Amino acid sequence: MEKYSKYIKSAKKLGAMEAKIISPRTVVTAEWVRMKCQFGCGGYARSLTCPPYSPTPAQTKKMLAEYRHALLVHGNKYTDVRAIVTALEREAFLDGYWKAFAMASGPCEYCKACGVTCRHPEKARPSMEACGIDVFSTVRANGCPIKVVTSRRQQTDYYGLLLLE
Image (tube, rainbow, N blue to C red):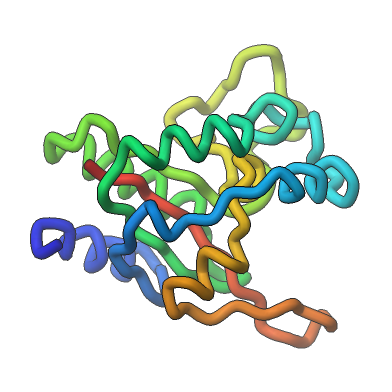
């Protein structure tokens, strides 16, 4: 765990409110999550990082089993969680963690219209939700704050995940 502490520091330096090492076994995947993307999100099928193009919950569950550690990154509406986790992925890769893989929060917004091939493959990553991760259950299982936002005045919590090995 100590060897990953530098990524916690880097996450905070990049603007994360909090970051902590978790076990990928505590990451909850569920089929209903992608249904919420399809029936409730305007980003569905508009980006290569969103369903139906993103990994399915079953694929995500198999992939999570290939990792022993993950970094859960916490931000708010002012935090660019996507930029933080992709920067951390690159940092970890350059440190020798070639399997490092980041998952962001919400639909990708790098381009107005997504093409057949991604114009920003170095930055575009699927969101946890797009991969079938139940963010609420995962975050709560790891002792982090998250609640359903019922008004625009309430603080929102955004999370990203960096898989490390």
